[in-house]
Length: 246
Image 1 (cartoon, one colour):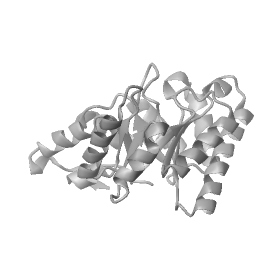
Image 2: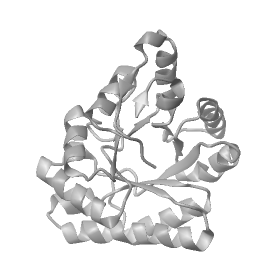
Image 3: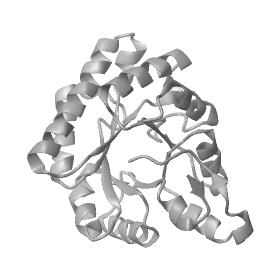
């Protein structure tokens, strides 16, 4: 898509508030700002999912939360429970962390079972609750992985039917990089999106990730990025990004 308006930019931003000390008032203010900018989604901690859903129910902003966050080391049963609970609370986007340790150990079967289990739980809730499609993104925490491990992760995630591969939790020792976004885009078929997340705080960084092949940007700085864009002269507001997903 061509990004030439603030609406175009807002549609690819997952605005994020995952601080451990986020208060209810922080979430209320955060959701008001998200509705004003019409971001693709907001991501809040699981405890605040139902509050965010109520606050944004009359907007087009989707509510998202995390599963197995941030380590990916929960058991599959726990992750499945988290996913079902999140959907019941109003989440329509789920970002789950794959089992990083299992992947690093070469236990691809465990990684597959983990992702397939959560995907199955989510699809069951879609059918049972008539909630419409849930967008699922799997976080690989790329800073811990070799390029070959990233390739394996992409294959497993794509085969499981997830909608996106996401670079990072934002809490690891490294965030999104142009190298990783390009690599993920190379490894994945066009039907699977790439979400760049972790350390993206400026419009320039956002555009770099889009040009590298990202389809969605996860950031806690969406409002500031929108302000940067709005301050640009109209003649400077034209960038081509990859297609949007979700």
